[in-house]
Length: 484
Image (cartoon, rainbow, N blue to C red; front, top):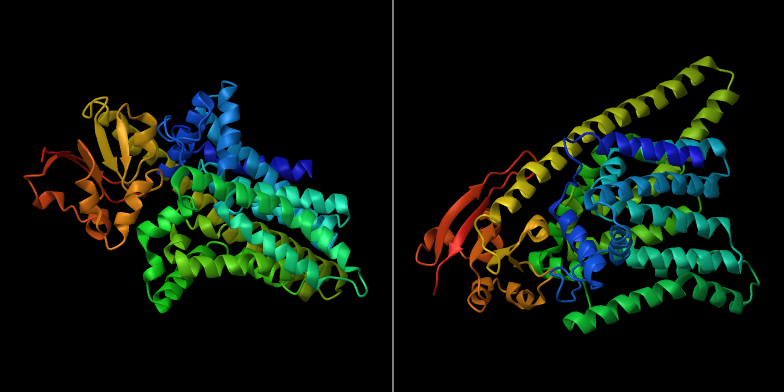
């Protein structure tokens, strides 16, 4: 298992060393780092270092980063190195999951190699977000469920599920999944008390984690729900016709699967495994929830909300590849042997080419955050004076580097704006707050905010445009907000 962790480490390092500078790849990555920095400095889960907020998607990820920053680690090195370490843990977790499923060292090794050189997971290692941590915990939690069915093992699994819940909201889908699956696999004549005991051990810690997060949100913002709820109420995709939602989800699923067709094809060989019922109980409700509430989310951030399926696919793909190899070894017909070799080669080649191609995408995205986002935020410090307020929908880089105040127009860290997104009444909210500058995408203003600054010169004075790049194509436009 140490060898597979080392492979995962090397596969991630190959990606994160590609850019000119060590930087994450999303504006949201800077939001996470801002929360971690403020938590380390002030002890508060806060974006502005003053007010407590629910804007951190992953409390566990933020707390772990904050602990490292408190020890004096450099922020950008910390967030990237942590992701690389999580990728190594992910490879080890998938190894264990494949072992739990197939009891084959060959299948386990192939599964670990598959996840290590999957383009999305290597990219996630350097994205500065919690994706790699979530996938690693998911792999270990599933492996733990199958490997140790004693009360002690159930307690370990329950603890891992609780960590999963604290990493991303989707971790909560594990709670009903393990309770239902544990009922399905009950042995004839098993006492009901044994089932209840296992359910308490498996789902109890995670349920407490959900309750703690809900209570924190209620105390801080007056409502239950964090960033997921804020994004849903901002984009309002839940109001779309069901047919449009299903179409958006299927479209983004197709784009996501296009890069991992070999992985999915090999996994299909072992889909008949009984344990796939548990996988379905976890993943299918997740897909339904996104379809109903946030269908466009499946396309966000290089499809990262679909990435939790990757550890499961890799484990099954390892079993599928090992099965083909066993067929080739045991079969006397050299035509069969040649066909198996050809199938595995056909699977390996596009996997590697996608791994290489997405490395270039990672390099472009990371360079863009440095040369565009970071440079823009630093340039804004020469325009927006300390104490002045900049209103923006992308608050990551400007919040991390800015020496001015930032007003979140989406609602991630500013719950006051959220009610105004219903009926697209943001202009009414804008008149209730003091703002000195506005930074926005033109298309976002058209679809979501409705301020139309270019056609209201009496209210907005154009200052500067920051051009888009190969990944983020939309330009940011900066306006001075004139006195009423």
